[in-house]
Length: 171
Image (cartoon, rainbow, N blue to C red):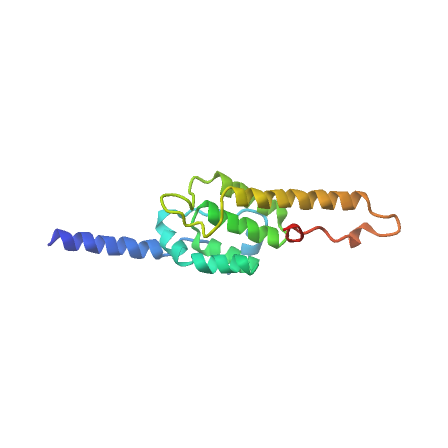
């Protein structure tokens, strides 16, 4: 057989395999609990980089439009591990009020060795780690506001009527 044909065939098989998703099942009853508790882990690297590349614009649009659960499901269903994908999970968790989960995902974004700004910058306008740290600071500010509000509740107003500060209020 022709060596060129074999190499071309193997390349095509590899390319198709890289577009196959190795993500997490997102239409299960447990997905939201796993997401909200910060337990989602993205474990696919090169094998799903094609799928992640094809979905980049969709994920950025979901982020821009604050469609947080849709963003979390899109990221998790692909399962591609890099700082930007964990950043998206952190933003989605924060937007939905899951602050502890958001901190976990932002920490994973900062610590993963897989970066969107590698040989080619495919960070879609984000500046990491600065944007990750900006969200972490907003979470810390929201927590501080909540703590201050809880400690200064007037005696004639029940504390359960206090609305927690949202990270989105701070952005």
